[in-house]
Image (tube, rainbow, N blue to C red; front, side, top):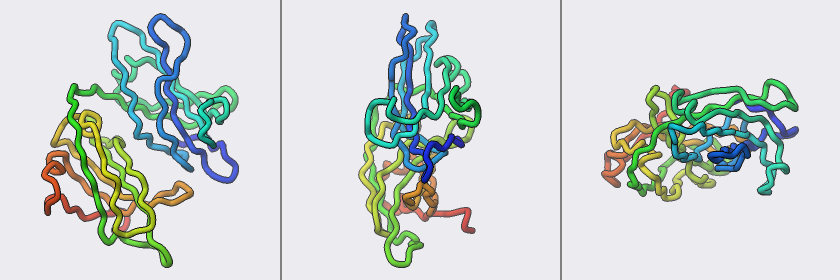
Length: 240
């Protein structure tokens, strides 16, 4: 949240790189990279980082935020925004943790990182679904809007966590978003009745994507397939 802007003429393109120290080692090894999100200082990463928890070990983790300006894999070619170090036990205990990012070069005001942790079920079930939109509100005079969907699940604290984001469908008010194959243990914590929030957004190239509307559903309802039960109106509370 509120990341330092490393770009002059636009906003940073953040990516989070997670490192760990293997048992018996003090060397950091890269564990996972999230997706890179263009032009934003408040990214919500949908990439999950599965880690096996060993209660008897001190499992050290480091979360590094970079501004990616190219597809080059070498991290030294990208601008380092800041990092946060902790143990897996700290994350498991806190469930949701927000801490300031550290960057010795800049001191303070590098932004913060919010990390949400949950125990995954052993479920291997997957759900295949596809959404289409009909007659979406078009705010453009001479072209159609470009849109994508974001899916959030409810946490134990009542907050919502991003679990999936579709690819953008360009220039149509009747989009058919790409078919999704999602693991239920991460999509809904393997709980068919968990409340899910779906947000339809208009893609804007500068990163200031606009909310078109929201609806709520559950996996149990989605599993009913194409039916009147799975037709949803998009509601935008900000426009009421």
